[in-house]
Image (cartoon, rainbow, N blue to C red; front, side):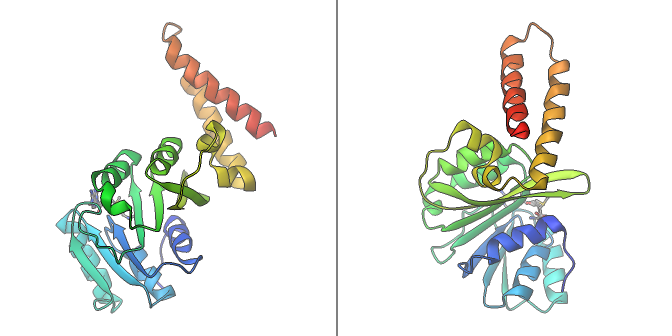
Length: 226
Ligand SMILES: C[S@@+](CC[C@H](N)C(=O)[O-])C[C@H]1O[C@@H](n2cnc3c(N)ncnc32)[C@H](O)[C@@H]1O
């Protein structure tokens, strides 16, 4: 079995565990390690590994050849989801910032209509990621926090649907709020310390900025305590 990071293993488990994916695209596949791992766990999957840059695709081809999956993984040079057809039921976007992820999905809104499942591993801005992807007609099906190499990641599985979430659910994640595992406390305590530090460094005259962070600190303190 190929050796991949815990973050990528979590992305893979969120793709595989509901047994619903038949055909997926990995947008920004880079080395394509995720796609090799996915096939090693389910060789019925149809996988398109795509990247906007040729360098990563060459690296992907090298890895896919090494693991003898050249006939199973279609490699394409492509921007976002612009080249997907309606046979693709699952889209993975992993290892990018929230703004890039949103741009990829919003640039091809029509194409998102055929997608049943999105598995997203953003590097940042988790609340606005939840908010903006749900506004495209998805609901949050499952989320998992991963702590690796001193960094926290939240991997989120979205499925088709419409739901109104509370401010608290958007901020903490509705699924994470319900489960509240040990990483929940670890991550949100870390975030609380980060927000307190930011607050200490914002001059008094920036009232609006201070108010926003103060609200976050209050919400974090209340939730961690409960
Ligand atoms: C940091 S790598 C992430 C690799 C892997 N997905 C992971 O999670 O480890 C980001 C990759 O996304 C690609 N990328 C950035 N913007 C893209 C876009 N609009 N469409 C397709 N690929 C993109 C980059 O070329 C790069 O290979």
